[in-house]
Length: 375
Image (cartoon, rainbow, N blue to C red; front, side, top):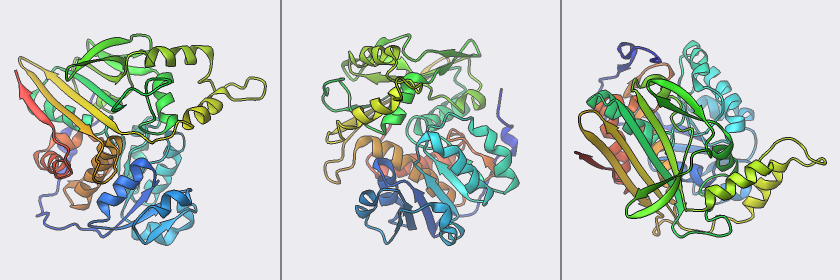
């Protein structure tokens, strides 16, 4: 079922030779947030918020605050666009408040709530909300939306990965993004599309072997389709995430033993303890992101990309893929290309030529290039 008819989605045909706004606020200055801030500060007056003073101290911008964003009403009033990189557990409430203030929100969080429930709030306050505006979901939605709208594909397969460049012990993985989000991937049911119907599967119930660029990885169903389930009318669609062999079996054992549970045991919340222990392994590693989005009709259409840690800037690949994708969407909004209110899923950026070309061009300038093939 479609979210809403394409006829109500309008594009602003004004020339976009300059950005129409000057100030953007970014919530979160961690791995992803710092990449967004670095990218946008080249052209905008960026204000950053983060509870961590250490994270803020590493930013080369003047306006940065460690207090609550809503205590700085003057900052919010001056910002037309707010980019959020908050944990999914708190993002929904924050985004709803921002939309009530009439702000355009570009949100990278992996929230559990349905973002479409914020559509009425955004429309009532003449705001626009771009959920899942990161890498996967995010950039993968845009590529999927492009193939669906322009090529009429009937089946879409999404393969993604954020991995350390070398297999890391003890769990043959590393925290390429926050530990909360990683555990969510293993505990939250994944939705896929089979024969035109949405099915919910246990993410770790079907571990399969998948080849990518000459290597074999283990793959599991991940809940990355999200808004695509309502906006793209295909018959078959799924997202799988890759890990080094052995990691998923270890995570399944931990999950089944209860280490990811929020139910207290002898006064201790197992998941909180597990998150703390996982966090001790740190982030001192080089990573890579693998992407393959494939569409099928009478042909096979495919976008592929391998992105790696940027040695020159010290920016991790996951931060590049997520942060630069979110920054690109924010730039498209700032340039006045989108004249819409309400929820604007990332795949809509793939529906229209100018938005798609701009998005791909912005990523290309940052060294992220997608190869496209037809067979």
